[in-house]
Length: 177
Image (cartoon, rainbow, N blue to C red; front, side):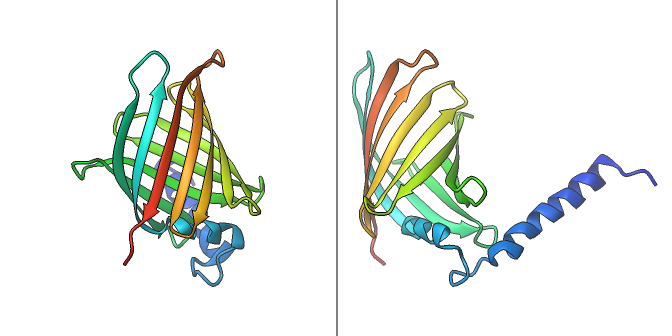
């Protein structure tokens, strides 16, 4: 019997789809402690950001982001909206049990994407991320969780030569209700 490419994709995709259900079932009470850390991203947060690109004028702005569990609770999805309300970035986060690290993938409307690995410092209430972007830029950022509703992130971005090309800060505040 000869399998078509579509058959293989459907079977493999179906098997991959079983993993989240068999791992933690998607229920908050059965979600691993590492994933429960991401619950602070659930709901809508207002964000104020500033950036200092090397050789260019500083930038400042605001956006909103809404986070929710998707794919039976295996991933947290964040949708960022511009000041005009249009979707301009989607982020997916989870925890990689084998690597013992948080994982994050970001996609924006320019077609650029990024992949990040993060580690948690529970004592400092912080996540530190190391990121690589499709543009060749690499970044390191630390997000400190001031409390369950507020966070502050600082980041530094470097080009492939290792030269700093930008620094940025972001303050996020979860909306009530």
